[in-house]
Image (cartoon, rainbow, N blue to C red):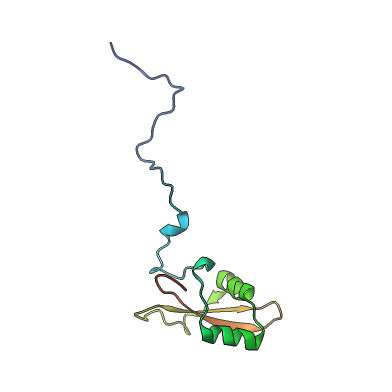
Length: 107
């Protein structure tokens, strides 16, 4: 005798794979600018310039997320870490160009 499934039973879809990984882990940091602020680290020079110009880490994060890439000022061919020049405006109307060096483990 042949057993049949009723049409109300859910059918497993072999094409859909269950994946519990973090979706942000699929971002390829070698293909374009990764705007995730979780990778952000500040150099001593960056902290000094931020202090001199009264720029907060929140303003840097906002420019990283919303700023425009200036490809003429960027160095994408850098072997160690491509450098992206991101431009934006702070809360107190300072025009900024921030250089983000995007390495494998950090930006």
